[in-house]
Image: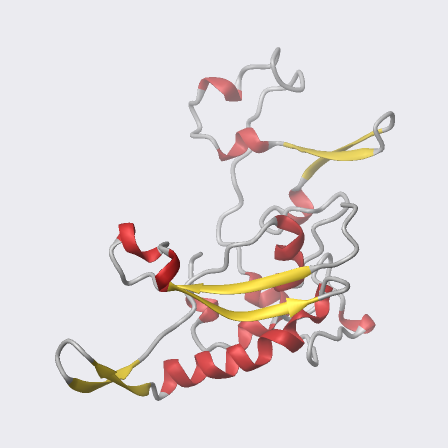
Length: 199
C-alpha cells in the first residue's frame, strides 16, 4: 500500500503439460512486464493488445514450430484458457467495477452488501446461497446474520450479453454506454472463443 511504484507481470502457463510440470518456472513464460510508476488500471487493454493479436494468430492459423524430440515441424495452436488475478486486477481485466454495493460480477444486482459505519467498509453477505439446498448452514441463524438463507444461485449468467455492444477503444470507455457496473468491453472478448469458455 505504501509503494510508490507498480509493476505488473503477465505470465502464461502451459496447461497441456502434466499437473506437476505446468506450474514449474521453466514452463512459465513472461509475456509482458508493465512498468509503473502507476498501475495500468482500465488502460491495461493497451498493453494486452499485442498479446491478444498473437493469441488470435495461434488460434486461427497457428505457427510452424520445430519438435526437437520427433525432429519434425508441426503446426502449433494455442488459446488462453483462463486468467488468474486478484479482485482489483480482475476489475481492470474484465471491465466490471468491483467496488461498491454490487461488487460481485456474478450476482450483480442481487449482491448482498452491508455498509459498516464504524469501520467505513462494505462487507458482502449471502454466500450461503452457493451451498447445497439442504446444507445445515442455510438454516443456521445464530452464527450468521440472524436469517435463514432460502435463495438459490442465479443460473445462466452471461457476461458477453452485458458488453457485446459496448464500443471500447484500447481501454478507453465511453461514458454513455455504462451498464450497471460494466465500465468497458474487455479486449479478451476479441478472442473468438472467449464467450464460449465456462471459466
